[in-house]
Amino acid sequence: MKKIACCLALLIAFGSLHAQTNTGTAPVQDIEKVISFSETDHDLGKIPYGKPVEFDLELKNISKDSVKIDNVQAGCGCTTPKWQAGPYAPGQKFKITLGFNGYTEGHFVKSVTVYFSNGLTKQLLFHGDTYKDQPAAKTK
Image (cartoon, rainbow, N blue to C red):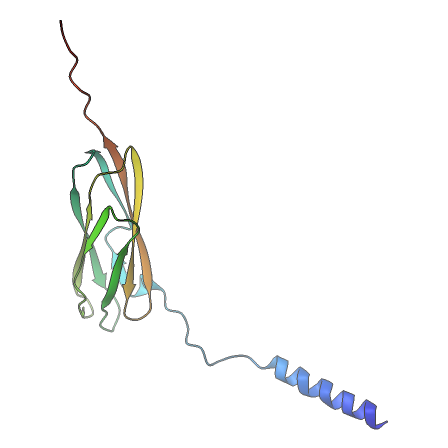
């Protein structure tokens, strides 16, 4: 009888432990509620192969707190980001300049990841097509 009582007590104890929820974690914040982006996929159109281009992406802090950029990491060596860490006050606009060296043949899609001090990240894309000039035809 003692064994049954012990087993029943253990079963009740483990059942109550399993029923508890974890409330110690902070909710994950949505980046779209903190930063607005002028665009998340920029079209460079057609560009000459090997000709560097740059463009700006505009961001705006739409939260009630200041934000900082910790890092902007390019997906490959052909992309060069330029940015300032901040801080950026609520309502403040700021920009990230992305440079592309043009040394990808044909259609391309490139990415950068922006890391903010509050732990949020956002991947931004740009795409386009490169072309090579055709050599002039020889005439006799």
